[in-house]
Image 1 (cartoon, rainbow, N blue to C red):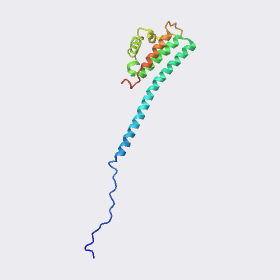
Image 2: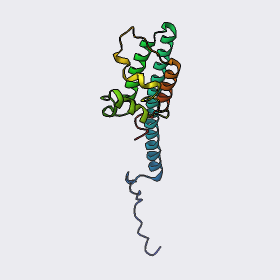
Image 3: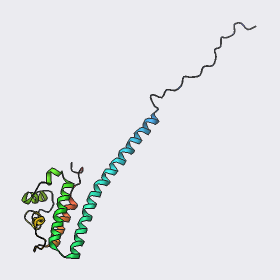
Image 4: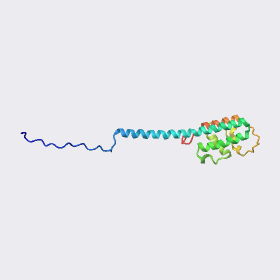
Length: 163
């Protein structure tokens, strides 16, 4: 007879694995998901900002085509003045450009332009254009004015880029 049998215990299962802390793979998945969400949000913001610039330039093309059809310089200059004002409010803070008139408006355009031809050049008509009667006679180089406005619109930063 065997001497003393070994006291055997029942089979014990290991304790259940806890949910915290997660395994490194879960941390990596969470980080990848956060990066993906951030990338999507940044992409949407950039796309929206670029859409503003495309919209403004498309409106400029519409104004240019309307002038080519009707050859009315007064309407062209008034439309350009309105577009420049609306674009400035969109590109910069409303408080920086919405209330400007006359020489201060032209100075703002020159300050934010590569070509400084608003206050003392072709663009000076934009300060008085909205107040001209419909049948006014305007002596100005229309192509130069369109080029000046287009250059200004193209080189403007959209909100968020400059701040």
